[in-house]
Image (cartoon, rainbow, N blue to C red):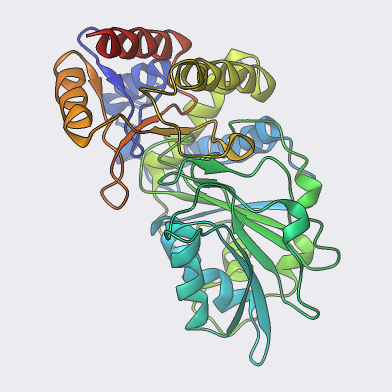
Length: 362
């Protein structure tokens, strides 16, 4: 597509152009039906073929075990902060949480409205910042905990888990909203993961929940259907009209991942992209300051500071004018941030690095 800029926004973020091109074609006429994909009934056989195909391809791309169910919710990952404990934190029970920043903190607050929460590890420093994630050895489960929850990648702090705690018999549940499908994972380590689609899987509007059969069996039956994992699984996420177009887009994005060579190929590119940016910062530490400890650096959200806030504002303004959008850091921490999700090409990061070098030289 001509005239497109380099989109480094943290989400909703850029989508693969082949997926956008296919979606554009389908808006007026989906697969020769004479109606657009957004006009197609969720009960129609044409959409059912799309729906089942999306689940099959997502499971294949991620490498999910056979005992995992894929559910589709609205409400974003933030809704899951509450739905999760409502389903899995029984009356009088307790759950373990790891605090690594803003989104983990929101999940903790939501769970505290349902039951007892143990914050078993945190990476907050004396200044209230989160420059790292806890090491697996720092994270200890509480006896009898219903589950342990952590956020795998933190968009604001620019940190990411690269190793997982051993939780024993306690199910490990992970918010993967900003790094799902960015790297190969051993899914046997997780009983559940959830992710808002708008970073790596599609547009805003649908949240993917991946849950094991053993965890589904622990869910009660007292919640309304649209908040009930077991009921949603029984209805195949079709208890009401699902977000049909975002689900369709998840199918196009996962098809694009397969076309790249699968998760392994995507991960290789992601590591190369992150390596270019972190390499620049490490080569010029007197000008570019990377506040995240090296072992916790995110592959998806690269954060940095310049010598002064005035220079940061100048860079944001000039870069935006020159076609690099979305580089402003989160309002709660300031600074700069490049979100380099799967759809961001290696070429885009190469051009950004070249631009940053020239800016520093000036």
